[in-house]
Amino acid sequence: MSDLSGRVALVTGGSRGIGRAIAQRLAAQGVAVVVTASPRSVTELEETCALIESEGGQAAWVECDLADATARQTLIEDAAVPFGGIDILVNNAAAIPAYAPLSRIELSDRRQMFEINFHAPCDLIQQALPHMHAQRWGRIVNLSSEMARQPPIPYPGPAKFIHALGAYGASKAALERATLALAAELHGSGINANALSPFKIALTDGARAVAQQMAAQHPDWIEPVEMMAEACYLLITHGLSGTATNSRELLQRLQAPLHALDGVTAIGDALTLAKVC
Image (cartoon, rainbow, N blue to C red):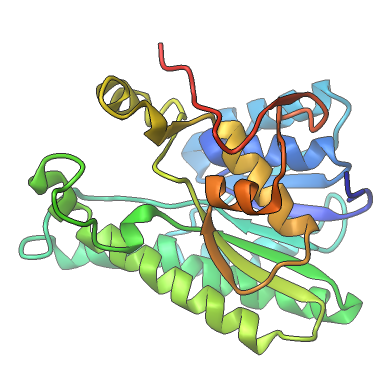
């Protein structure tokens, strides 16, 4: 395992789900982790830090409403207070303020979606880059979604559900395109940028209802949350840049085992399915 001791990471949306799992996985490898989420998620942020600290890791939290451009102007600066400059930036936070097709989704909802899913990651990247450039080392992982591409027909579910995710998918497609452009711009700088998405469904508490519906027909679609945490760790440690991939594909290409969030216990590989109760 690559030693990340002494590195500092900021994980947005770290109060639960994939963000919390990534924070735990990085902390297990010696990273001092700062997690952030909106003010309404402070209790969950405290829980994330408590979980990390109970395993001997270092963690701190900063509340920030990423939908507010003014509020996020100093987020990287604020996140650097507990442990130092941000070496690893994981843009995990995302929002779907409205499930509506593009023919009907309101402008305010579209703006909020792009504000959180696209503009916030871009702003945080710009804030984090000076420190990364100064040390000639940095890692940026932007979390994307399968919805960045139009699903093939027949759809893997009701058509109205696919149509309702069109704007969300567009925001993630924009983030992927920006990630690849950034990686090209940063070539040779020591700073790597990649985009990562679940294969289909990562089994978080928020996705449990959907996972239960899909489990009978498509058990292979559902991955444990550890899969995304492992894939994020691999992108950070393997020197890859300019990649837009999904978790299972990355583990398979690298022939990497799947570890528990402790970073030590092997629990499977790219083919490991989540147990849906």
